[in-house]
Image (cartoon, rainbow, N blue to C red):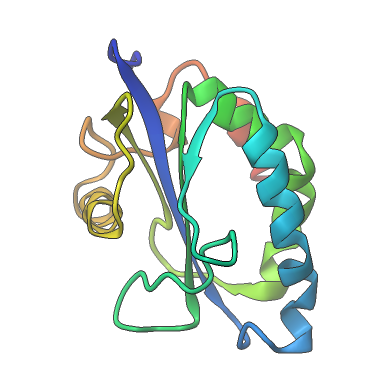
Length: 160
């Protein structure tokens, strides 16, 4: 699949904490949020990210008023820009420790989709895209890394 003209890549990533956000067992995650977000904000190809008044999205409710479910959503100029941020910055170091802080969801937790330039997706849109991906698999509506032929780092890194 090629990137449509005049479109950018949106992503939503949902995780369920093993412990409450103020629990010392997730402190390693919490203390890195600001650092990872700062790197994203300065990364080539970064366009926008969901954030609350604290400059992150920890207070954003994704579904069912569940405080253990946290969401990350952003828009990037191209899949290659997102791929570079995810797998070639400090994000990768934090990602490697995800099993210490997050439970396995048993379904897709990352969805990607194309948005017109200038569009900032809302939570409802992200929720719908993730639901579509889980129900129907990758399509033009929502997809995973595997739907993008020009990005390959995820294959090596997710198994490392």
